[in-house]
Length: 292
Ligand SMILES: NC(=O)c1ccc[n+]([C@@H]2O[C@H](COP(=O)([O-])OP(=O)(O)OC[C@H]3O[C@@H](n4cnc5c(N)ncnc54)[C@H](OP(=O)(O)O)[C@@H]3O)[C@@H](O)[C@H]2O)c1
Image 1 (spheres, rainbow, N blue to C red):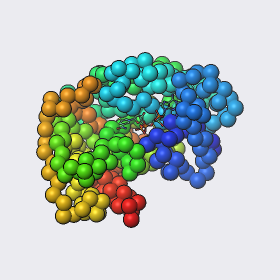
Image 2 (spheres, rainbow, N blue to C red):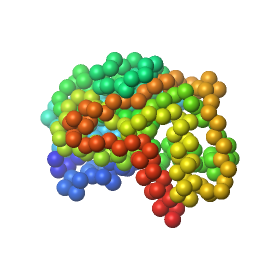
Image 3 (cartoon, rainbow, N blue to C red):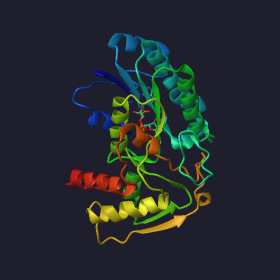
Image 4 (cartoon, helix red, strand yellow):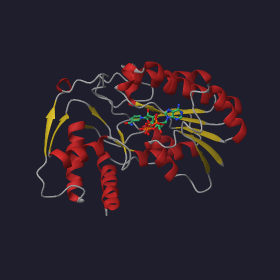
């Protein structure tokens, strides 16, 4: 594997995929201006010209609530986009790595979701992501779909940075305590993506950091670590109050429980997944170092 095409390269996960690329791999970075994945002819022409040895698709429509009123756009990017890439990869015989979501599950159970649990997406974003998965399955070839959840990083808009911003501005937060899942540090997922590509894995693979929490518990830990690392003032009183989903009605439904089982990832790669608390510690330490 010498040349890898990366789509959606300015996104949160893609930035980490770039940062963690193996030294021997040349990554062709593209975002929508260089390669719009919804344009089948453009995807084919780009791959003909650059002949990548593998494709990693980080391009996506990720605005979960806005998707409810932008169905066509969400399906173009999350379903037709990966279909276009899968068609070209299958025709050229190169591996195709796609990223999907815990939202493809209904989330009304209590067990860690496995790759063969039946998806039942609710809401436009979730449906569009599942449609992308189904296209890839149907097209075949050397495909892999990594499902992940509750993604965050020290950069880009995400839950961790929102909590830090609101805590700094207001000192008081209300956070949902009846949705449970597994936070995933984008840097850890990026490492997993390269490992999986390197070991030639195929099919669905679940990757999230180990352990389960609610958004409220996640927020409490974010603030605790941020005060410890001096990202938030240690002497500032910050009150976080748990609340129910119904108190914060949103356009798109969310799974109540969507933590995933990562045993297949460990079987395939031999790598141990660290806990969400350890990963979050690294993220907050990184933010502290950046603010230096
Ligand atoms: N974020 C989460 O909490 C989460 C959770 C579970 C799974 N995931 C999945 O993880 C993957 C990465 O998510 P992320 O949060 O890193 O996404 P992100 O930050 O929103 O990045 C997606 C990138 O794709 C670009 N893009 C949009 N339409 C495109 C097109 N037609 N052609 C090429 N590029 C296009 C976006 O550009 P614009 O910004 O200009 O639109 C953006 O740079 C996605 O598949 C997502 O579904 C995310």
